[in-house]
Structures are given as structure tokens and as C-alpha cells.
Image (cartoon, rainbow, N blue to C red; front, side, top):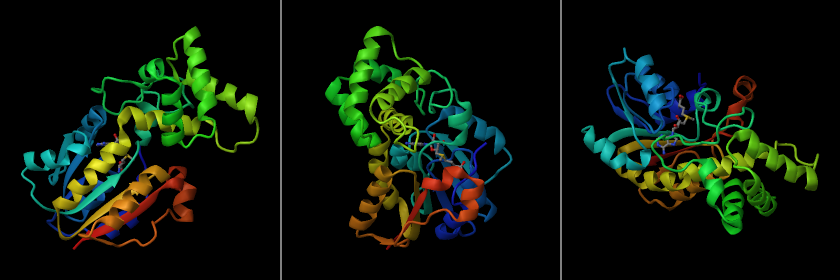
Length: 287
Ligand SMILES: C[S@@+](CC[C@H](N)C(=O)[O-])C[C@H]1O[C@@H](n2cnc3c(N)ncnc32)[C@H](O)[C@@H]1O
């Protein structure tokens, strides 16, 4: 369903202790939380994806030391308060999407499947990726694709999207992937090693879910919730997220950085789980 990345490294660095309270802000399928509970920690698990949380509730129904909540981690302060939690010994964020969301949710997170171009992790959000493509202008496409996708062909892709949507609505992952392929074939065919759709899909997903703002908002809240010597562990999957975490750790006086360099997956993990390729774990401790 979902293979947790950097599992041992994360749990060891969180220094899980018996009877202590932890918050897993990105529960997914509970790979990390399960280990915390196995070490006798208590977990409040949060995930913005209601469908995923409802599946997890079934899978974890026999666990005592676990509360599961469907909410956005940007609301962490209220979520903790509602659940009677004042201070915790550790907080985990394992950012991005789960393999289940990519492979089974049918929401168009990947260009390898032809699905509706939705990309919402939270189905109550009003705007899908397809809706965004209907309304953005040339400058907005450029900004979104270059800033959130670090996409070199942002301008050309924006122009092609505007042209294509004038002919036919861009409704599916295949529609979007075909337009990106067209731009790359004209300009850089054969030069890029990665599928050129990777960055564009990333950019739309980040925009639809407002991912970078949610991350910026949760960091100070998480820091406030930590007790003395409590630890904050964050796994990120691209440089935009990693930069936000790195800067926050550096500029927050009440945090001591534990991982001078981010922890990355070992060759044996990489051989088993290619998704771990871009994972970077940073950990800090409350003074
Ligand atoms: C990489 S997965 C976590 C996997 C989990 N650690 C495991 O081992 O199963 C990331 C999860 O975070 C959730 N997520 C992403 N952004 C979120 C947010 N702002 N608030 C709450 N959950 C979020 C996604 O829905 C997804 O299920």
C-alpha cells in the first residue's frame, strides 16, 4: 500500500519513549506511526485525505494508543487542543503523497495513468488542477510552473495550455501530459532524462493543495507544541520543501539542529523503494 521511507532513521531520531505523546501530521497508512506505537508511544495521527484516514481507521482499529483525525496539519494548534494535547515529545511530517494516493485514489496525481485531472488531497477543496488550467493567464502559468515546478519550459507550456484549452477542455492527466510532450518534442526532444511531465504535475499538485503555505504555517505551531527536548522530524521530497524546513530550523532560536546534513536513504532502501530517492530527513530538538 505504502512503504514508509527512512523508517528506522526517523524513529531512532525521534527518540521514541514509552508512554509519551507524539503527533504524526501526515499519517498516510501509518508506517511511521505503527513503529512509534510498537515502542509504546501514543500517537495522534492526522491526514488531510479523508478517504485515506477512513481506510486507516479500519486497518488500525485494534490499536489502543492511537487517535486518527482527518484535517489539514496547518490547523495543528486547534487539532491538538480539541484532543486535549498541550505538549508532545515528538512531531513527524512525512510530506507529499502516499503510494495509495498515486496508485489507487484515481485523482490524477500521476501522468502514468489516464485519470481526471483533480489532484486534490482534500476533496472538500473547491479548485481542481483542471479548474486551475481553465482560468490562469500566461503570467500566472509562468509563475506557477517556474516557481513550484522549477520548470525550464514554463513559458512555452503556459502558451500551449492556453492554446489547447481554447480548442478543448483539459480534463485528464493524458490531456496535460500530451501538451507537455508536444512542447518538449518541439524544443528539447531527447535531451531530458526525467519525463518532462514530472515537474509540471508537481507544480499543479503543490498549487492545488497549497502545500508550501501549509508547511510554512505548521512549523511554528509544531515548535510551540514540543516539550523541552521534544523532537521535530520532517521528511521532504523536493528542494522547495527542504529549503523551507532548513531555513526554519536555522532561524528558530528555540530549536537545536540534530541533523547537520539531511539524512538520505541507504543504497539498500533505494534498491527496495525508488520513492526514497529524493527523500531528505531533517530533525531538530526543542531547547
Ligand atoms: C508520504 S505520505 C505519508 C506516509 C506515512 N508516513 C506512512 O508511512 O504511511 C503523506 C501523507 O500526508 C498527507 N498530507 C499531505 N499534506 C497534508 C496536510 N497539509 N495536512 C495533513 N495531511 C497532509 C497526504 O494526504 C498523505 O497521506
